[in-house]
Amino acid sequence: MKYSKFMEGFDEGIFEKLNNKKIELEKNGKKIYDLFVGTPDFKPEENILKEISNKALNPDLIKYSLQDIEPLKERFIKHYKDRFNVTLSKDEIMTVNGTQDGMCHVGMLFADPGDYCLLPNPGYVAFEACAKFARCKIEYYPLLEENDFMPRLDLIDPEILKKTKFVIISYPSNPTGGVITKERYEEIIDLAIKYDFVIINDNAYSDIVFDDFKSFSFLSLPNAKKVGCEFYSLSKSYNTTGSRISFFLGDKEVIEQFKKLRSQYDFGMYYPIQYGAIEAMNVSPLIIEKQRKEYEERRNVFCDGMKKIGFDVKVSKGTMFVFVKIPNKYKDSISFSTDLLEKTGVLCTPGIAFGSLGDRYVRFALVKPKEELLNIIEIIKNSNII
Ligand SMILES: Cc1ncc(COP(=O)(O)O)c(C=O)c1O
Image 1 (cartoon, rainbow, N blue to C red):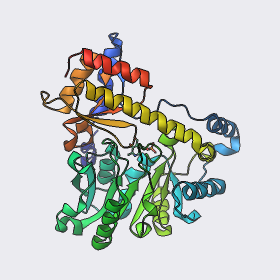
Image 2: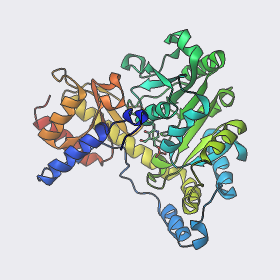
Image 3: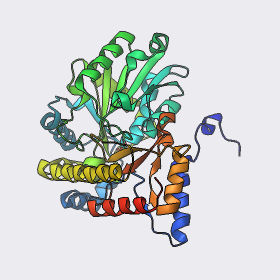
Image 4: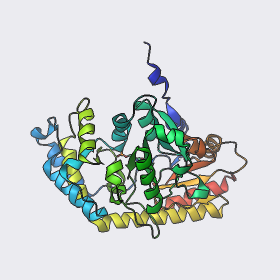
């Protein structure tokens, strides 16, 4: 068969290649320490699991749902008010099958082929897929360590800004672990007003922030709803990555447009997941706080340990990731991560997977208990890789 030019824009990716390498090494009896993908090792709360499984036994709830159920919308509105002091109405929210699904399609609302979008470099891989699905041109904005991994969109050529239809922003940031200040965000909103582009904010890690940083919703900022929209995933806060649900938020018109697009290829969220999401938002904030602290302790143990054995580590302010500089003697992030895997069995993600500016870094996911992280650091130390 002959495939489209569009498909040539995607390859199997570094994730797939490294995963295959991992499987091969495991087959040969090598112990693998997997800090590769951001799948939380914490368990979801039992009320979520019980609700999904109870509802799954009801034959009426396996039908096309077509719409989000009223109790879910009501519970979400309360959640966003309590959590971020953002007031939303029922026609300003809709579900998608995870942010990744929503993100891949949302660019089509705003851009036509040949228009520009602005994406972070380094950034989460689905952002690039969003641009590719919308068939628009990409201008990357650098996230540099010396700027605390915050964007400087004001440095982008005004001629490009004039042709820009949307920008994707996401903090706390995967893979850098950086956060953004409200002031910096307000500058981006001003720029969006000036150049008439849309801000798509991805709020995936608001419950995993460290030290004294207080996370916020982009929609809580002045004028945000006029120029932007937001994804809010339940995946990481509630450890429900497989029961795919995320919320897309914005003004009524954006929601109507996205519903129109989605109705072409989707018949609505599986009811048991919708009910499970209500239960997720009923989980006590104390439990979420306990988990946040646990991530913070892991971050401390990992960053301190890696620094002690000689790595240059930018201490994460949020997310479940740590971005670590590779030793100078390595030519790039793939050669380092491959060597690390072969010598120690420790699997991390080469920074190049997130963009060219990630190539002097690798990303470690904090998805193991502290004791295991300490053990992993000891193994790295003894390998003399540094
Ligand atoms: C920045 C960012 N957004 C979204 C997601 C995925 O969210 P979901 O599980 O809702 O698709 C991830 C997952 O790693 C992520 O890092």
